[in-house]
Amino acid sequence: MNETVAVLGNESSMSSLALLDKYPNVKLESCDELIEVLDYVRSGIGTGFLPFWNSHVGEVTHSKVIDSLDDESSQIVEMWPGRIVFSCIGDLGYKLKESDSVASVHVAKIQCSEFIAQHNLDFDKCPSTTKAVEKLNNNPDLHIAFCAKENVNNALHSLLEEDASNPFNFTSFALLVPTGKTPPSEHKISLSLVEMPLFTDNTLDENQHKFFDTVFDVETNHLNDVAKPTFVRSKNSDRINIIFESDTVAGQDIISDETDDIEISTKEVGTLKNAYGPLTNKLLSQSFGLNSDTHDFLKHQGKNTCLFFCPPLGIYIHGFEPEIVETVTKTVIAKHFEKFARGIDVTDEQQCFFDKHYESFQSQSMREFRFLDIRNL
Image 1: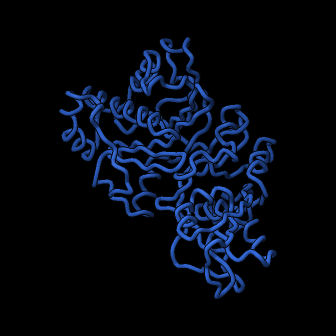
Image 2 (image 1 turned 180 degrees about the horizontal axis):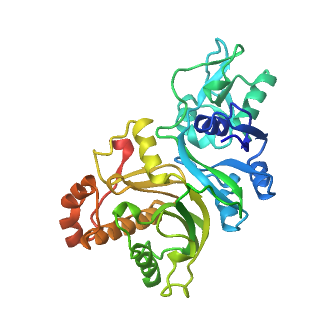
Image 3 (image 1 turned 135 degrees about the vertical axis):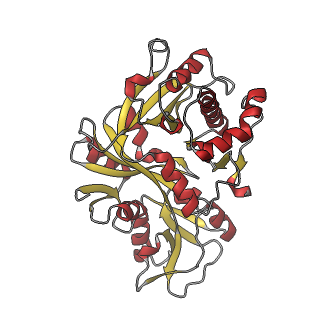
């Protein structure tokens, strides 16, 4: 990628480093606020790169990524998760003290909440880590900041070797372009944004069951080809959004004639070259040493967020309220069992998974399946 991309902060901000790690030759258009990045895209100027979900914060609402997909002012052309490591930096030789103020981007207050509590720090909110470092340099009463280690220089040093972030801290990023821009020809994976009523008592109603039946009844040759939800978010008090990725189901094709008259709508919101689920699996394995062989049903919960996943089936679903996301996840896993029962091709790993769990599924459906918190592994 050789084009210019709008990002939050300078080349040492978290967003810039995540982008440059994947595309080292990209040119950066530095913005002071997340909304400026989105405006860069919405106005038709060019591509923007934004965080939109974090494993501890949940949806990064300030970036308004999913809102922009919903109002069709932008579309995604790539998304991937990246580990976020906050270093505690300050003047050389400075000793961290209780009640010190630490400056950082606003989301760091939750992403580093355990470190802040452990050292009894006051939090000084900034619009970006770039602004936090500027504040540290210009305010003699401020001695520390949370930012990337790339901000260390002759004047600022890492005060502690440990990562100030909470365990399993990672963020999902999206490359956005103006709606209507033709995607690259190698992009074969479709992203769809579905809106439906919030589940009652965490249970799908008849029409919602029909919807999921429609999605999973699409003919595919292999289990890995079926549509998969990746994100669930609360749109308002009584409706939710679900983002699906699939190389076989696109946009309006998710809704069949059986379901197009109910309160469920869908729209195409982008395309990908690489599916998001396998990238999440790679991150959890390589960056956090998570051995997915330990348990087939796993979860991670943050303050306002959760991730439920089943590695053998390639299911990774991020969301907000655990009960709602667990309902979606169990529904999707159940549909995979049904596809398996109808004879769809599976990998050797998936065959082992079904051999181990199919009898329990037949007798109990998904009721007795329990998700293990990865912090307890």
